[in-house]
Length: 424
Image (cartoon, rainbow, N blue to C red):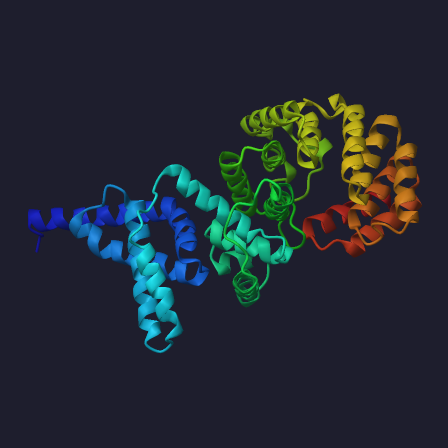
């Protein structure tokens, strides 16, 4: 039997309201959670409160309509739901009664729902998840869970590990925050340089795993690099420091080459062999603008310099037009402010392309003679490539075989195997 017009209209209205709630969940849930963590001072309690608030919205909004300020409604509802939950627990644990009373008293305080207040809460959440007292792996997992809203299963799938392993990392990180009384706050200006660096490291770890996976069947993971760029944009909006801009610029410039980095069948394509018409020019333009802005501040650091190197590559219309001299000079500057054998290796490759393969090979051999990077497959791949270009086939073969024994990424394994066949 056909539905009556008024009933059909009412059901349509409910479906539309449900869609409204889904949209609001996607856009507001992380912001509401950040504020609830600040108000309640407890991750688990805040997550339960967020869930309860949206459950209440599903009941009330289709009937009463979406409130004028959904975010404020959700925060207030979540806070009262949390107080109710604590009072229920207090029946079995008297020590919780005081906590419920304190929250109840504070609940009469007006909730600051301004855009800036909410952004400040998000910034506090990022710095809490990226606190240097937490292990690096836990910082990344906690950031993806609490700031990005990925599920435990999604994070586990991204890192090719089990959900229980990720769940343990997150639980331990939250326990560490609680037990060590890590403050839920933006660091003071005195502590900001070190804390900002830690937060940027966590974001860049997320990006790197997405841009160049450490192991597995796929060369890249677009979901992870996309989340890292979203976090970078959020950080830039909240805290427009030069190095934040440098990191965002670096991620955009690297991400601009994603499509060209693999062939249609998923095989690795080296930078010099990439179809540069596939590079995303809008990302390149935005990345270069951020690099120029950071350099102009004269308060830039290693992320900005790496972004500047990526910008030089991006500006070359053909591999032959690459300004390897400028890239080698930028690596020399980077090496002075952040000494690292990996940066030394990258500089050696730039020197090889600018001054000659022999010069680059000598630098790589000096790294290996010191015992640095002996188990790093890329140093052996780089050495093999220079030997191949110099016609030193047996040395190239030995280095490729060493690289093959160390790499855990299938596309890289297949690439090295093709190189070895080419030497036969």
